Image (cartoon, rainbow, N blue to C red; front, side):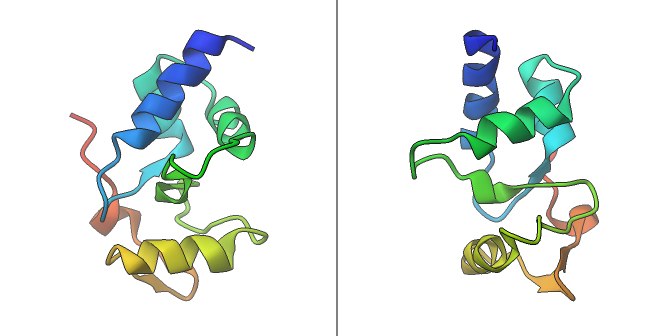
Length: 97
C-alpha cells in the first residue's frame, strides 16, 4: 500500500464540505489514483472518527447495505436527504473543479 496515496485520499475526504458528497472515483481521481476500489479500501480501514467517511458514496448514490442506516443518518444531519435509500448525486455531489 502506498502510504502517501492513502494519506492524499484521506485529505481529499477531509476536504469534502458538510452538505456535500463525493464518489469513491472522485476521491481516487483527486488523490492521483485510478482506483475507486482503493479509495474504498482506505476508508474501510480507518481507525479514527475524525474523517467524514460518510460523505463518500458509490456513484449510484446508494450506501453499502451494512453502512446504509448509519451513513444516511449522518448525511441527513448535514441536510443531505435520501429518497428510497439513495442520495441524489446530481444535487449533492461536490464540485470537482
